[in-house]
Image (tube, rainbow, N blue to C red; front, side, top):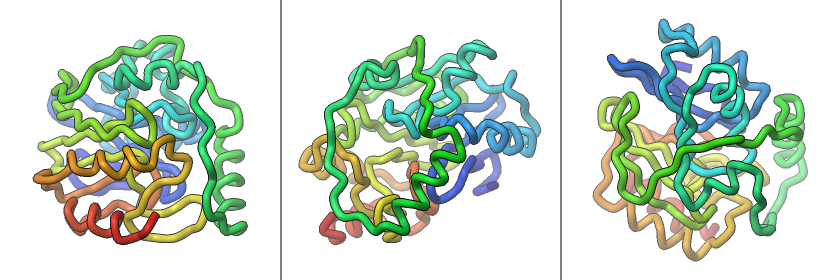
Length: 237
């Protein structure tokens, strides 16, 4: 799905990842579910690119529904996969603490689980190797994104701001469609390790302006970063 020139979404409102291009190549932000591989190739081709043009995979965090085909790209195409140092072990499958589910609506939960099962989400291929960065880095990959630390959903959750496409990628730091309830609009994502820290981390977005706020789950948000954070806080989680 084309969002803007040099910016496309792979997947849908249930699980999404994103492609950003510039004159040096393509960066993939998150890697969704393994079964979204063909959609990834189709969106890449629609941009006039192939896997050979992808220079980096950037993970917003190391959860299973964000690393789906990352190892395939690394293994088959030699594309480096980057993740915050605090989530490196998570991306390698070294475990994460249990988190509560909270409120669930059966229809929404079934839709999420059925889609994940259909797209290979029940069989995760973890990363054999990752490259890491720390807080505040500006990464030397296509688009030169600035890393914004947003710990809470996981210890190494981050956002990426790409000035060239005026987009802020937030992973699961917030959601615009809750996969367990189906509720629309900016809110906290489920399965968050430390909800209090996740709430506090949104202060890092103060002063960030972007046309696009792009989550791992839900519709692209174009109502402004500040308004997304305000609605998150007003949602009551």
